[in-house]
Length: 134
Length: 157
Image 1 (tube, chains in turn green, yellow):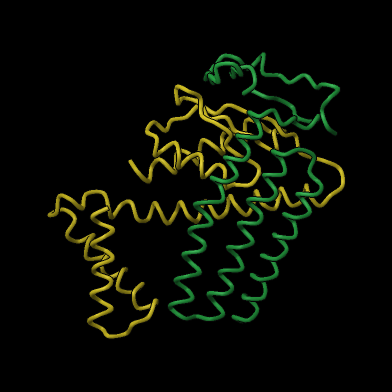
Image 2 (tube, one colour; image 1 turned 90 degrees about the vertical axis):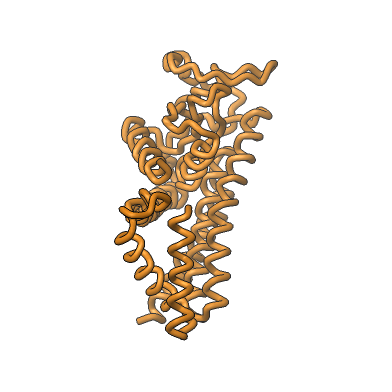
């Protein structure tokens, strides 16, 4: 029984990591790629660490496995957020299928001011440009 | 915080006194320590609110794991099938979190669930800009995000 659970955890963890790699290759722009890579890879590491903790069932290994899980959970979203934010403000182009962008009209590239403008739902509609990558 | 430290100390005392140094025994000790803290809560001022918070934290962890799996499978499906079902976009979410700490935590939780990535907070700290992958049902997405924020804030208030 425990062998079966361990095997399932390892295989699903590895397939989530494979999925992250496929997503990195297939998805069209940087922000959607961040979605696939950081989260699926983090979930993969967590599942594999759980399998390792179950396999060794030893206080030292279990404690280290849980420490790894906690640090992954703390660092992965921060890295994703920083990369995504930097890319957006540096001017990385969005995919042509992007339906709306409520940030652009509230951002002033000269002063780097970011307003909260709650009333701007109408002018947030995105107009696709010819320079967008497909 | 004092409650959590006392709970850990009681658990460690249980491990020392029973002489069985294993993780499982520590867990048993923490459960007994928790029961003891629940019983003495009305008498001790600094423990106020701790016993009620623990089940909420456990419930939140369960809720979060469920969300994580669902969203991961949805992203997985879109990555593996050839046509794109996704409709990505940047949306603005009004925040009910006020302090820096609360905003950090909410933004991190939103970034952790696949399909949503927090980009930036407005200068007046009222709105969080989120890049979402599936905007085909925007109302539903906003409701989910709000529910997650509400549950996360409940843990600290």
